[in-house]
Length: 448
Image (tube, rainbow, N blue to C red; front, side, top):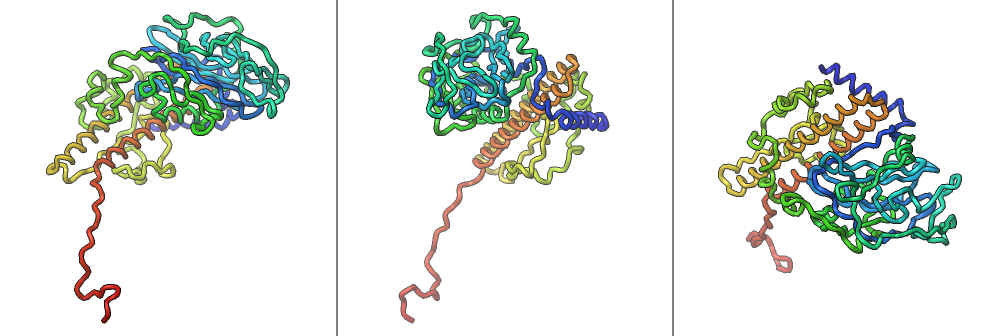
């Protein structure tokens, strides 16, 4: 069984080394990243920052989904250097399909494909891109829709287009949103060779996800950072939203979860996870409830028990050193991550505050375990889809890289939560009171 898993890891490694030129090349299928049961907020109104230089292409802002916080968050629009001359950006979009809203990821390619008919502004009118064009290896900017400094960027032209960027607009396709279908040319663009998000865009998304001010429950559809001049730069050259869009989450979602960091135990009442499971119960016991997801994934059928995990000498029970990257092994899937252990508190039985903190720690561990299971199930389903589609090595490699990033993001979030709980458990430092000097100690100006 370990042999099967080793073979799978070996195949992934070979794909990563043998397909260097294809590392970011996507197949004909455009990936679906998220699936949500209520609509994203409208697109806010904001001004475009100044283009930082030649070769940068505008990528519009959009609402992304955080599956761990059950909340939308705004990814600011930004200028990004094209990965290759001749490549344009096709924005992602939300589409209503099968009673849910699905997010279709964007990509780079020689032609702009279908992006849901969404009017993102600044050249992205819902069809194609009117913000600029490639001529040879140089990109020419349409100054009618782009904010460029013509003293520094000389390759410009002007073509007037209709601009509806002064009012909030719907941000999804279908179910009362934009009613557009892809043209034959847009479908062909999706089947052509294209490139996934570049690393600068991925970093930009992660920083947006970590910024609580960009969550819809915090800004109510009006993000304080609507656009940036460069990806990942959230201070200096940033632009706030001039006008916000409507955000109508269900009664039990969105704004009602604003205080979930302080006390989320009550919000877990409707979750299907094992609410009554003791915190220290072994994780493999949950496999009995998941036979369907393991059918096409033999590598995870024999998930290691706790005693089979690699040594965790660099991960002590108090998690004090878990935020040090050099001490943390790289995990691809939540099943591979050792369970979070609860620090022992010898004063828990005799101290009311200690008992309170211990209960908070247990609730946190249970919630994090539920998030482990939820992410693992979602990754299992993606493995099944890949197997059914007979995906090639490049797509499998991209999937594993995405799974690794998802797992790392989840662990970083869990570490921060553990640290906050532990900081509350630590007693405040006591100031030492200086008493009188000893009788035989002379004062500074005292004569012998």
